[in-house]
Length: 413
Image (cartoon, rainbow, N blue to C red; front, side, top):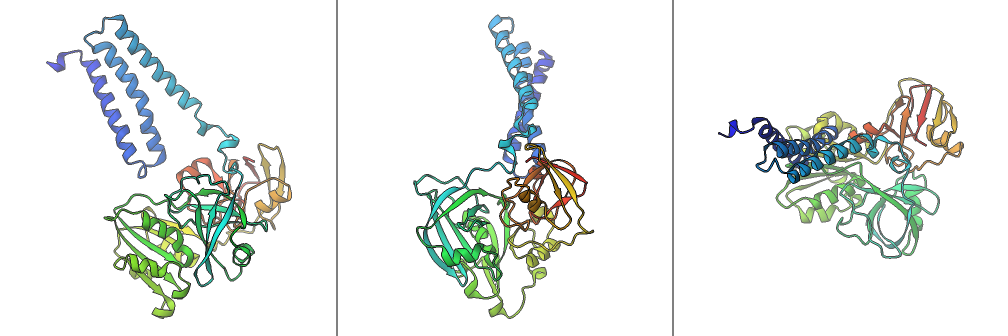
């Protein structure tokens, strides 16, 4: 009998119901779906409202009353207008100062409240805002940019508790050939010192998975540790922590004591050999998170399928250009400036010489601080930053190391 009762309006209601189920299901799978698919499915919610409006207007028992038809008409018009506004005037379609990679908040002054040794050549810093305001919410893998008093900017992974909103905790390893960042911290950072802090940003997000294999090399343990601490007790995971010597490996003893069955420490001064990553990774189906020196991350990249691999670099991967760098011209769309980039300088250096303000930090294509949006032209990417779908959609490049394959490049600066 139901099939004979106004079949078209009833069919529209059924389609609307399935559309809403798809919208709800895509919300549960948001981290696993391509961003474009997820957005397309969510636009279906507008279509569901339109279908429900026709369903209600044609099949209800009170369909003949003016109030019933008025409600259906209002629903139909509202959904149509909302869909048009969302589609035609979406902020993602406009190139505005607020949405560009370089439009970041000014650094917030923070006071170093404690400095404590963590391992050989590594110190921990506790940072807190002087006015006691709450810090932004962050997830494991995040890294703020620290603006040092000597003018340098450096990014350090957060290694504290994300639930602690009163400040940040970072670890700074003194590199043998420091360009002034880690050396300044180790020589001058004392409680009471004020530094600027912006961000944090996150290019190394922990995605849902049933099983994890964490690979950390040296100071690369800092984002990995917060990821492990954020996992529920029943989650399956392993950590392989690699270093040259145990006394230089941060959080080594703590990790072994808390999770003796899941943590493996491979210190070269104890094992006497280089870890066999091929043996470690053979047969695993776990989601792999790797943070360490370029030699380690490059090898892991060849052993793990991209769909199961997440990599964070703290040193630049060696990249050999296929041809000699060529000069090119840059047009800064917002300022109207024209900048010539020679073959002997980076794009970032040319922009700085022309007094075009660009936020920058590592200058090695690792941290992502200098990200700019390409409006037209073709960028040649030499960075070591894992590219996300959102970055690809925004056409982002990193001028500290990347160049242009076309004679003219237009940037959103």
